[in-house]
Amino acid sequence: MEILLLIVSLGAFIGIIVWAVKYTKKVNNRKAEMFERFANENNLTYSSSKHMLVLLNEVNGDLDGCQFQLFEKMVSSGKNKQVVTTVQFSNTPFTFDFKIGKEHLFSKTGKMLGFKDIEFRDEKFDKKFLLKSKSEDEFRALMSHEIQARLMEIEKDLKASIRCENGHMTYSYMGPLANEKLFGTCENVINFMRQLIRAKR
Image 1 (cartoon, rainbow, N blue to C red):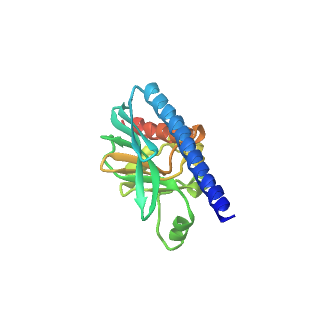
Image 2: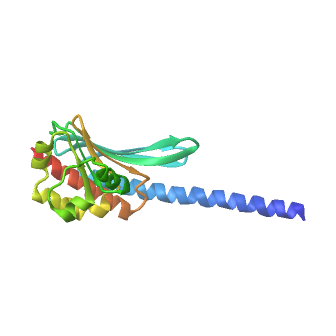
Image 3: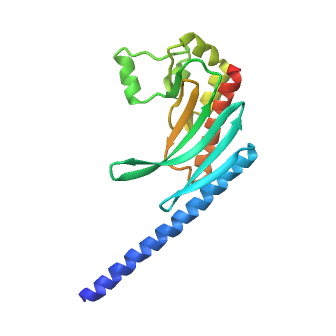
């Protein structure tokens, strides 16, 4: 009886491993197709590397006169490992730093304690977004009504903050862009970042 249970358990374990390998391969192929499509549509270069069973994708090239990267990397936190997807525009025209994110519980608590962000006297807009910059006048000039309207349109797509520091504008998403819907949300954010660059030129 014990031998039978051992055989069944071993078979189940092997089955799980086989399923995990097949699923990972399917996700890898799907991601590779999306990254390569994006690269081809924007005249960029696609490449990939492997970390264990996970395929890490990367797109590089010139976009709107800036050095552009869309890449995945494996990040370790203790015993856990997670894919992080990052969008980066280098050599942007921005001479000031800023942050564009969504309001959350901690930021709302901070406001009650007196920490202020930049607001535009639009109650609906100001409640949704957390905007920060030490160069307030330059940032306000950037955030035109058109830019604000576009930001409202991609509110649900914005999974993290857009940050600009020393001319590098980045957006990092915790996790892989494992399907078309997630990849589409990232593309919407990329297009918004491109709109910011064009507005500054």
